[in-house]
Length: 96
Image (cartoon, rainbow, N blue to C red):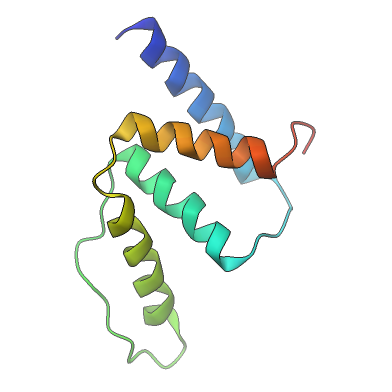
């Protein structure tokens, strides 16, 4: 593993910790960006599409999440990590 990749992985892990520990509330569209870049950075993809027939709305939410992941599926994993880090740096202060 190259030093550049190690540094990116370390910065990504730190960004995930910051995002996981914040109490800050974000609008749904921004949450979807966090989710999509995180999932892509890990190489995770949803297995199937969900239908909007769920009474409590979970299927609708899952559909939005899946759509967000599909929109970033073609960017390289390293780019997804960089974009995730940028989102955290922009929206979550170091002290949080």
